[in-house]
Amino acid sequence: MHSELRDRATQILVQNDRGGYTVPTARLYPYQWNWDSAFAALGFSEFDRDRAWRELETLFEGQWADGMVPHIIFRRDDPDYFPGPAIWQSGTTPPSSGHSQPPVVASIVRHLMETGGPEDQERAKLLFPRIFAWHNWFHAKRDPDGKGVVGIVHPWESGRDNCPDWDIGLNRIEVPADLERYERRDTDSVDPAERPTSSEYDRYLTILKFGRECQWDQEKIARVGPFFMADPGIQFILLRADRDLSHLAELFGFVEQREQIRRWIERSVQGCETYWNEAAGAYCARDLRTGEFSNAMTNISMLAFYAGAGSATQRIRLIDHARDILDQCQYGFPSWDPRDDKFESKRYWRGPVWAMANYMIVQGLTDCGEFALAERIKTDTLKLIEKSGFCEYFDPMTGDGHGGTDFTWTAAIYLVWSRATPSSRAA
Ligand code: GLC
Image (cartoon, rainbow, N blue to C red; front, side, top):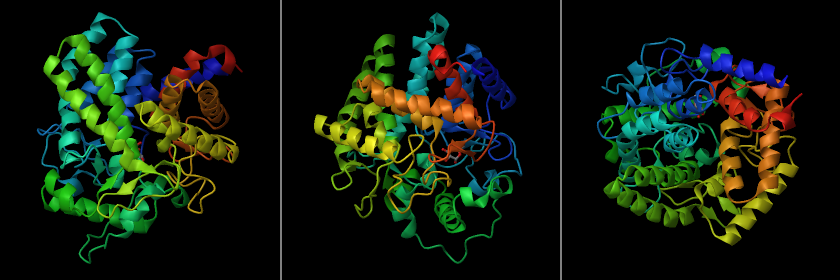
């Protein structure tokens, strides 16, 4: 079973390859997505290193002049997806969306270098200035006052589209009467009960409209746009990525950039305190316009370990909290606390388990010596895939798979983890 599944995972990556870039899954997501591509590169590195680098290089073909790497790159118009390039109107070549997504690339590049040879070093060195420009963009445009707190201007920027974290910011948005009529395409291929609601979609498009109408003036969008929230996911992933980028800068002898990265890290470490919600005993999202906190722990709260953030006391609380949450589930780690009434075990980011989130959680826990917890989450992930296949996400209570099938990042994580523990997972 183990080697059959590895073959299947390899096939999925190959079948989702559109020639230099990979789609997350056919139909539901027919373009190149930012962090999906980073995880695709991780998966490709298991059997085709050249292709792994190509994935990252094509992603940077979509980089904007200001350094931003957009969350979707539209290389050709595909009627299967809404909202497509005509709605975003990025004015770029290739066309793209107008905001970013979690910057995992630097960490994946470090992984490629550490598992590779001189050619990997060369390709990493060529990519370095582009990654640096992207991180610089996050620190400048998403933290305009330099507080060490990197915000998101759209729930899609977090990569956790409909997590209850964003309800606070979304509920404050008034949908304008002149919002264009639109037809969703996501619910053609996935049960609407597993997707964001239409009221959420109206608000997603209201934010998009604001960006389009100010021609993607990122400063304006962050300062006065309809939505600006602090996302622990972006904060922790960027902090980890900055640390990994600093390591690369040192290796390549990029002294000035290394000094700049050091300043980013210092500021971000302090900024992490903004996310600590004492009442919830976790790092939580927060509305940057009102200060209001989201009140439950998510899978992404666990990335504090991945980022190397938090005091010893905060980490102990997180671990205890994580154990309590896992006691409620058959499979961890859920994207929302099952004890909270907003939890929905099948609805996208309001409860389900995501393999690539687990991958980052496990890396962080392992780095911090929390081996038992790391092992539990890793084993759960492999069991989920063995039980339900390479689905987009999984129900933490039943283990059933949901969303898109033959999903790129689920296949990628399986490839990496099934190699690491072949005997323990053999059928
Ligand atoms: C959804 C997910 C996002 C992902 C995209 C493509 O929008 O929330 O994280 O990048 O699908 O898989």
